Image (tube, rainbow, N blue to C red; front, side):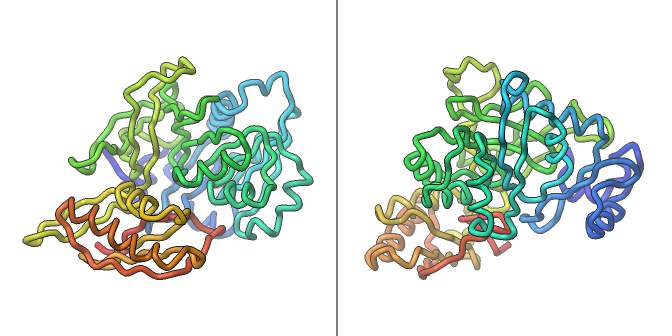
Length: 359
């Protein structure tokens, strides 16, 4: 198995063109999307190091065909207007606009949603693909009119799904995609299914105390750059029930986040306890009904900082300390929990509600 660090270090040995990662970095820094006739791109680097990809034009259109078949299966006989508000928009996405039956609108997350909300309304998309924070903002403002809603690029938290679906009356679907490829798309019932027709999945379990697993992927559509037994950093919980849509592909209960964001808290006797993001998220949200958003960061071996919205009642702070403290105590750890008010909503980078800044 290989991971992101090995892929970057031996990038030239992992692609047929023998192009190294430094060349790709330099091209992207210069605003170029091609090196030696190949399409190149990079991840957002939220885990501290970037991943890179190199594909041919043939692979680019294979990728496009797969994602269109899974997200817009009626595209051959029906025209679509698709709004894309995703980080790192490249020729991978723009290649779809060359088709006569799909009109794409591109909206820059770095400018902030308010800067292009009117343009989005004027574009009148029937389908939108955007991070959940963008979908939530648009729905809360009454500006999410698309009939088909796909969340992508970030974890779709249950609280975000609830708010978006309540405001729009529509099911929020997901696109599970990373720098390494397309790994899953939701069916019309909103259940995420892995793309097992093009990718082989194996699994590793980062924590024995959790049902969450990390995928190890082998992509059979890739020819230019090898992606074989590549261990992803994502945390997924798989479903053991068949989906009512009838798909034979593995259903996913939820994508929880990244293994990098699992808390590593010092317990009794100095033992380190691994706590997955869902544990602390549920404890915070369940503490008080007014809590619809938060941020949590582990800043030390036994220190957690939590930020709540400025408008939640004062009693919510005590409830969070008590509820989160009790949940962690049950796991054998008693960290200091510091609660404060106010946080930003970043549109120019990924939103990570639970984060570990301590190693």
